[in-house]
Image 1: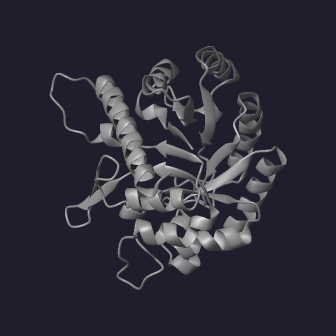
Image 2 (image 1 turned 180 degrees about the vertical axis):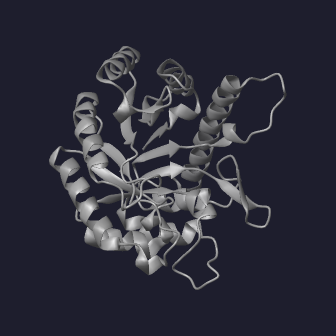
Length: 294
């Protein structure tokens, strides 16, 4: 097992991201944005600079947090956009030695019912995406987020059944603010534990996010790990008991909403909350492993 995280929540630039990882004593970053641009969208010159700094620091990129098929893309959008990202991402991942990439299953069409989401086109595209990465020696992982698979655990399992070779990321926090379309209307919010329990056989990677519903379900308040409704402790305990030995990747979101003193600037807040989040997940994992004797 190893710790990693979306270091763009600690710092905007790669220097600060490396600083955060080293401060925690970790050696991995789940790469997403660098200077507000996804790593797969950097220019070749920008990527080479990032690569050099990572090499000099001895820091690895264990996973690309890509935008492929994500919640910002409609299934009706041209597929070429994602194919171009794949063509840029693969050589960069191979150069970095990165073996995992996060993908999704396109945005939910809120104008149609859950059974009217053009799922066959989604499955078709995901098969092409998955095959391209697998042929390059890279494992694509679908995340339960605001996408077709995120409608509920049965939708994720439907994707697994229709896309050979695809595996999963389980994000503990996402179910808390997503409606559960496996239930009857009015659709309640999902249970993180129920979702995880249904898909855990296919989970190769875990995102740690935690939050609570506020304002009668109209808002989300992010919490430190184990303090929200994401069943973080229960999920991790079960995963470790089942022999999970993959990455534990933090995605705090706290700096976006955390209330601090007026004299602390945003950059300081990002770094401080990221480091605190990392130390808390280390402590929580240590407690769980001691509890189960591992």
